[in-house]
Amino acid sequence: MVSPQDAVVVGSGFAGSLSSYLVVSGGLFLLGVTCVLVRRNALYVLMGVELILNSANLNFVAFARFGGYGMDGQMVALFVVILAAAEAAVALAIIMRVFNEFGSVDVTRTDSLRD
Amino acid sequence: MYDFMFVIFATFALVGGLLMVFHPSIVHSAFALVASLFGVAGLYWTLGADFLGVTQVVLYVSGVTVLLLFAVMLSDKTLGAVSILRCAAMGLVIGPLAMALMVTYRAIDGMVGTEGAALPDPAPTTPAIGDLLLQPEGYLVPFEVASVLLLIVLVGAVTLARPMADRQVSRKTIADRADAEARGDEGASAPQGEGA
Image (cartoon, rainbow over all chains, first blue to last red; front, side, top):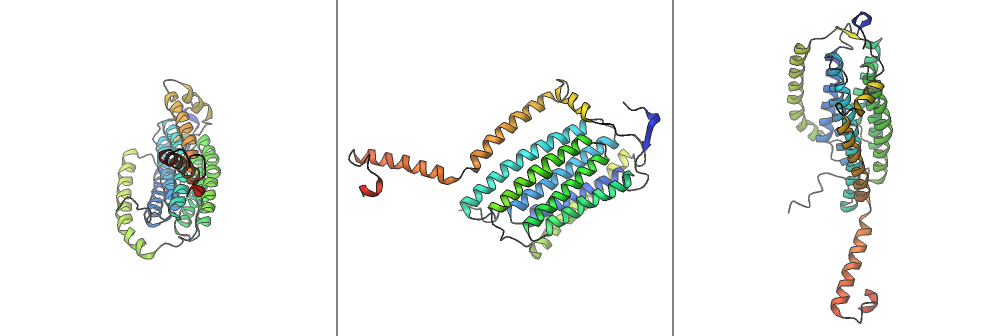
């Protein structure tokens, strides 16, 4: 491991500090939630979910670095990336089937179960 | 140096996200998502997570986005613009959420409080990640479970994305055959159109 003697100061100001990473992550999260809620196209919803997952990942990595938790935060983020890729594949397959069945990817029109 | 890189990558991430949410064309939105995800990968690099950043580029910026663009090409592009009314309504949801996030971040920042603290210079993380992935006391079990999950997803996605026409045709022929058998032997081998 790296000894404290050759430590460097990261982030003397706001940029590069823990709270700056949290602000970026919060912004990404809000953009993702906006995308999921406002857009009607299922592909946009999927993109919004990807943005939300990325913001959570950024939090994991930032806390692991600034809080001194070692590699665990990065490992969790790695598994989240793997799961997000799997989720995107299945979700896109479902979206293509929805397009075949309903002729549209509008999430407000897939209401066959409503009756 | 880190500050400078942080500003650049954070701008990429946030401006890309903004463009993605509010651009009317979905193809432009997908490319804005590429920029945003690349910005996040850069933020990983500034945090010393080099392997994670490269994984992000390989998996997200190339893989997931190419998949997304394929889906965009195969579906319709008519559901373009965001309606102002929905935006205004969702502001009621987003606003309190943003407030709650800020309050939480202030509290957490007070708890951790490492702003400007001396941190060790980031070292290459790939050997450590490899060790952790293959140690039973590390992440060996989640690693194996993830590989099984990826296999399941591979098969499931192919099954789901297969055109419905195939299955309907096979189901119809099965039903026809059952009908023919119920009616008797005379039309069993003949096609349905000639029998009627």
